[in-house]
Amino acid sequence: MLFPTITFVIFFAAVFIASWLLMPRFRLWKLFMMVAGCVFYGWWDWRAVGLLALFAGGSFLFAVLIARGRRPAARRAALVAGLVFDLGVLGLFKYYDFFVTSAANLLHAVGLGAAPPLLDLALPVGISFLTFRMVSYLVDVYRGLPAVQPRLGTPAATADTLLDLSVYVAFFPYLLAGPITRAGEFLPQLRTPRDPRRIDASRAWFLIFAGLAKKLLIADYVSTHLVTGVFTTPTSYSSLETLIAIWGYAVQIYCDFSAYSDIAIGLALLLGFELPVNFDAPYAARSVRDFWRRWHMTLSSWIRDYLYIPLGGNRRGTGRTYVNLMLAMLLAGLWHGAAWTFVFWGGLHGLGLCYDHWRAARRRALGEPALREGARAVAWQRFATFQFVAFAWVFFPTRPDFAGPLSILGRLFTGWGHPNTVLTPALLAVIALGIAVQYVPRRAIEAGEIGYSRLAPLVQGVGLACGLFLLNVLGPQGPAAFLYFRF
Image (cartoon, rainbow, N blue to C red):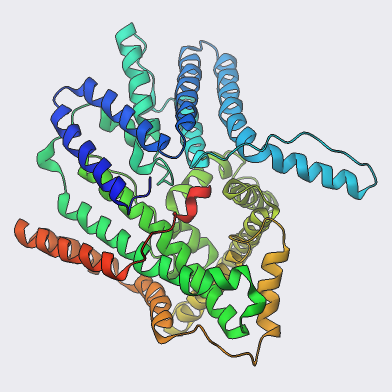
């Protein structure tokens, strides 16, 4: 069920009305929201609802074992078993065929033929996001985070804990593509009924409209008019068109993914819940390290807290820091997709982070700031970082082998002199707009939200209706699925 569709509008309208009508009967409201999330998720394939039940029930069981463990060894064993369970489900659906095929290819290369069985399972939408939330939940229970501890004093309290966890698992705004909302951020909001008088509806609609505009007017437009063609058959396009397409894909993936996050945050606000912000002008970053502070921030912080720091972070010397950075980013690449191109993409960013750490340490040793200051230096840092990120994206969307990305990069050198038939002024303007929005000051966006909220409700409604009408006229006939659904 895609957000920008009539089907979802009808679904959300029904859920919104029922949610606030049931809010005074809070336990019944929780049951309803759990069912609504299952309907939303099962819209793709009703069998996928079993996956939600599997994660919720399994994670609850291991959380109880962790909480009841009397000895550290027992608690640690329960945690390990829970992580094996959650990651095992992800591995079965997403990585089994990939690793089996890779092993078979390796054996074939050394002259040992093998034909291992493949499962060929359909990849459930958003399973990686779901797994990350469950892993962080179990780790936080093990760490003793008060907000996530199971309530086990009475059967009723235990049932309430399972119900809360089920709502957390199935909450539909973030279910398919994030933000990766941690249990410690969400479960405390389930302790008391939401107050409809505290809904920031103006901000919610502002975010939803901004997300729809980014998705329909920029991401889908750039994809339809340039990126899909160039990335599918690069030899049919000139070198200049290929270069612009590489920049265009960077714009597309940002506008597509941040659009989903904005809409998800806005929908949650209308239901009375706060979700974490996921993007902060990533293409205005001055280094790869700065980029990961701004891009998919809930993933970046998850990797830091549950992978990089447990590996030792930067506490065990320079060499171990570089190893930990590379391991974290290689696994982040593999998390995005079961293909060596994703691993390579993660490795590129790992090398970029290692270089940033080396450069910062070298400059500190000289008594200088980590990055040069001044308008010219900052402009160059932003330009160079964007180029690195954009060219790394080439290994992200194409075929699982390296032939696709290499043919795109090769076309940069072999297509000069060919006519540029698809680079229209409108297309170039849209790509430029996608980059320019990165440089709109945050305070200006907040001022826009505040200004909109101060308008009379009737004026807000008319303005929103006009804006949605324009999106319907100017946008594509049928919105494409969000790119991050595949992860």
